Image (cartoon, rainbow, N blue to C red; front, side, top):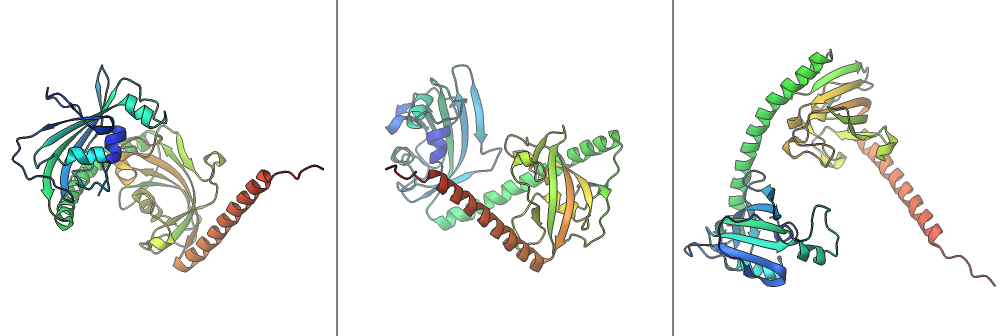
Length: 343
């Protein structure tokens, strides 16, 4: 379950349309509750299911930050003084099922509390405002977990439907790009377009393989966002792609990679054109990959390994990393060692 205290104290809530004045809470928060007083009361150690919306509010406008109704689904939290700040526990103890709570905290308070260590968009004289709508109150964790699973399945179904629609749009965009640039490709099973630049002649990659690769990733406007062949990105070692379901052999990658690699053999050089729904989807990734971005990857398949070979390669790589780490630590210790006293 996600802890909401960070959101409230650092990132705030939605500005209520209600004209009811805010009450003063503890430690710089202000709040108002819109209630009919009839719902089940939220007691200590009980669980609440709620929607949350967050805004950054200035004198000119309110900027939406997040809204669980459109992203992520309803949230769940236990009312417990040990897991949330006292000022938040005190206010949430007043809530009932069906209530709406609006909290706000001034940016002046946040800047002071964080000693100036805040994102540059936060300016004095403004507010973070957060609105919660209590959907349900549960007596036990089991009840809350059951409801959470129902909510997760509901959100997953919605996201899958959105992804399917996005894939249709992405596919057309990629096809238009390929046609415009006279690029010949083959289409992998999930929807990745693979341009074979050099045919491999070794082992074929499949779901029993760990594939050693070199790569450069770009957005469709040609901007590189990651590479293990460009030293400016700070990691030039080959990248191991775990195609298996054995997580001990390495973490997974985006679906577009495994989809494209399934079409290649050892020694192949190719370019992947990956729809956003097989990449980072509507969430994007950092500031270099925006939401719903189709991606291109230059790929070289250096080796296709079975599980035994992959474990051996991983041990070699781990030993190399430990040796480099020790070398770095030794150099730091050497430079920080005080010079001997002069006599």
